[in-house]
Length: 249
Image 1 (cartoon, rainbow, N blue to C red):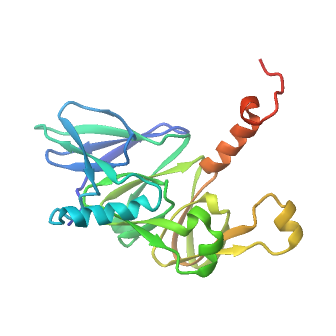
Image 2 (cartoon, rainbow, N blue to C red):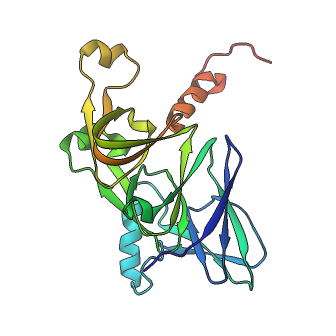
Image 3 (spheres, rainbow, N blue to C red):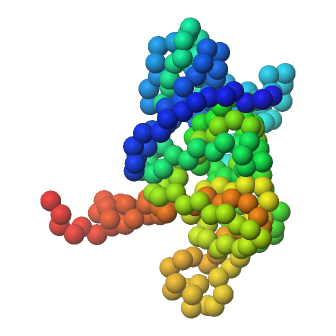
């Protein structure tokens, strides 16, 4: 199934909103709870799966949605369809400060892999599945990074990144990053987890015991502020949640 050809506009800098424009009959799918507002004529419905294969039966949809549940996401997705007579708009935003990243899937080979909480919305027809790292190291040390979402299609996809978004183009090169800073990468990139060398670096470096290694030729998207890092700082600073009271009024 070809993806719907939706137009969009992104507003804001640090806390962005993406407004998707739908022609009559067009649909955009999104994670539950990400919608900000929608114009009259937009109808929404919670469905099992991404709707990429309308011929798929109930058990097929349940199996596909069940694979998403492995990543901690809901079995259900919300479908927003323009049932009016003219163009209508619906807007989505991430639940934390950051950047919305539009990806034209046709321009990156039709396949990208992303962290489990990176997906925000996409044109209907985009297939949302699960990919496991082939490497043993990622399985033992990758944590949540071991299980990735696999997005397939030829339309627009919108991902969410914490803080500033950085795009890197690799040409038969290797890039090592903090696991939480990885947002997504295109096909052609090999993904693995490697341990930091040196006992002192592992214990006192503050960067964790593992790094994500990305090798090959393709595109890599990184985020400067993973939500897990932001949450850790907030918890450390909150007196009632284990942090110290510094006397701020």
